[in-house]
Length: 484
Picture 1 (cartoon, rainbow, N blue to C red):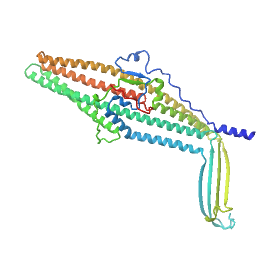
Picture 2: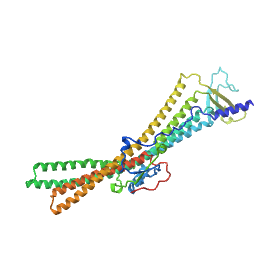
Picture 3: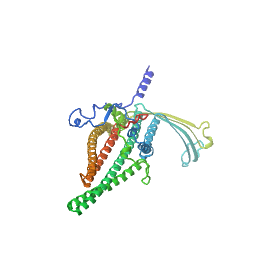
Picture 4: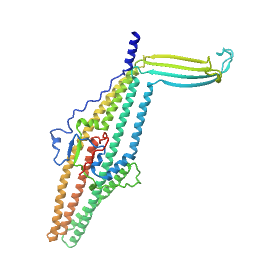
């Protein structure tokens, strides 16, 4: 019975691994993305977009903006951006490293051939039967070594490396999400800048007409010189707005070019206007319990915590006995032709049990360091989760307030449009002067610029919400396009 008991104990030890088993962190206790009552809850307004609670975020979420040009640009960025190539290579490296570590589960086999020419002193006896002091020796040998992973140190090392490879996979998804999001937001920025430039140029044209009219009225004595100077200042201020806008547009185009993996001397075929984009009628809003599963950065942080936990087991096993078996078999002869002939063979078989006894405290401190690194990884995971919820909350608050701003700007533009129409009719009837009409047109153009900025803000915040929810990377197929 004793051999069976020993064998069973060996199997039991072989099935165990030193150190703690990783337990995924508990889901966050948050029930929503903002308080149910209070100041921040009161910020939500009726003009905000509608949300579909618990809806899946589509993988190709940018389709929701209804722009084929945007779809094409994003796909090109995902195919050619070098940052994604780097992330893919990092993933392959992590996977290969984990696979390489698994090789330690198997016996290590090596072969060697060692030819030597040797001379010993004449007054010393030779180890050869001939007693020659000058001789050649050829040794061919096969070595086999096996380190039994009794306490699971290697299993924990493999577990840690596989968790790091998993984290790298999530990092790749996070990189894809960031590139897609940056491309969408940058395209929206281009559309906004083009709209602002067009409205500003039109405003400068109107102010030029106002200045010409003011100068004629001054010559006729109808207004004072101060009126002309005021109009000159207004025109100069408007013209001063154009160079920064054009600079931003050029830099935005450069960024879009870089996102697609091209150099600045390449010209993008796509251009973007706000009228080409559409805000989805309904936006997805994942449940808080779903968010930690959908965010690749959160999943990567969890995988890093798993890797750190496994490293505690590696450090723990390093202080336990190490079991190894070494064997060698070979042949030795003074002539190469005599190798492997009868009487030239040899073999050895040895087992070793090594127990560290004193290492100056290094083993215990390494274990303590691994435990501290695990605590750090768990804290970083919690910080990543909190940041994820903050991202969603920020996007929701921004959408609420941008919706309010857009509604106010729509009202202002509607009023400016009606004022312009009224001014035109009054001019036809002779009730007002040309100056009054131009002032009405100036108010209309200024309202247009504000509306462009507000629309672009809503589109950008909608893209930010898709990103904050994880971008739908877990979906195997894109969901249906949702557009106005």
